[in-house]
Length: 118
Image (cartoon, rainbow, N blue to C red; front, side, top):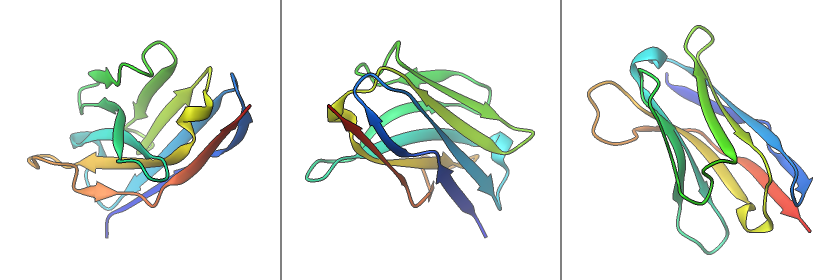
């Protein structure tokens, strides 16, 4: 059974930092591309950052220079370091996996809430 479990969300003030983690199990973590997505109330889900199985990263323009995605294949863990957070980044953050050979993100976590207040 595939599981993705996010943690690390919470409430911070504008300009603060949070580190999200995602623990994966039930699939070959090291072979999967991984990503972080977010969805704010009333808005569409958007991609935040992604990392391939060989470590290449990609970021949404809005987070470049402030967020860092990383993975630890030995621990089956994906992380997202978020700095200089803004109120408009308040959202539910989701971890997702695109397993080897899949064309889309086919596994999703339940999400962790991030709230940035002024």
